[in-house]
Image (cartoon, rainbow, N blue to C red; front, side, top):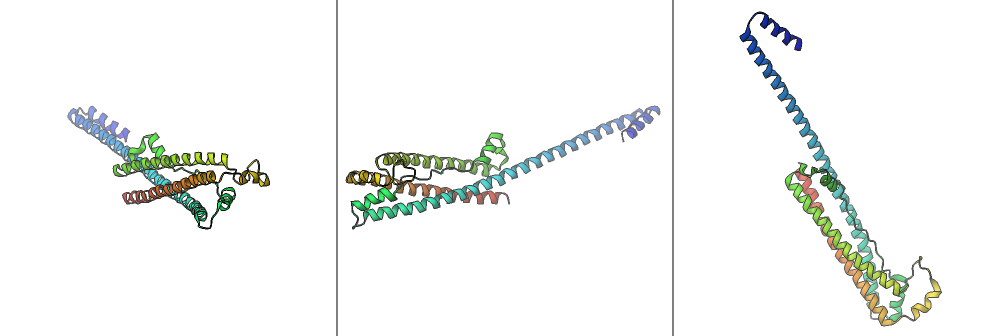
Length: 246
């Protein structure tokens, strides 16, 4: 093709047809410009296609993270609900009309554990990747704003739970220092601890056990409420993401 254009130019010049040569030269320039514009357009389309593919990958990854969060939160809620049921049962037994100090002492020694699972995490990998790469703007404006708001609510929820966990853990630590509960990793167990429990002050044990058990019941109730609220909001956000992609 290039050889053909060159031959045409040479023929026009040899025949002294300058005006035709000029028109031809202009036409050739126009064709080159059009070619460049077409190439740029194709390049832009390819770039847009790459960005769209990247955006879809991020959206799918965000959706998977949110779905994983729901599974994780519902598992934590179920675990706390089971433990809460046990704590309430202990409370009812110790509050029964036929309960005495021996009932409370046996429960404190053999059944009540002040420990709990501190599991308190969510999936931020995709969101953090969007922030660190500056690709958050790839998302549609309304979805981007909803995801940012949801992330803020996730962090607030985790911080609220973490604060309550710390308070509960501090109470548990103090309680186990005063009352040697029956766990396998105690340095001393069995009959050697009988004298300790026989001489424990009744009112002091009741006060301390009531305090930590009440704290755990309250903490578990509050934690499950905020977790369930986050589950509900996460499900709504997933539906909004799905709708935005249709």
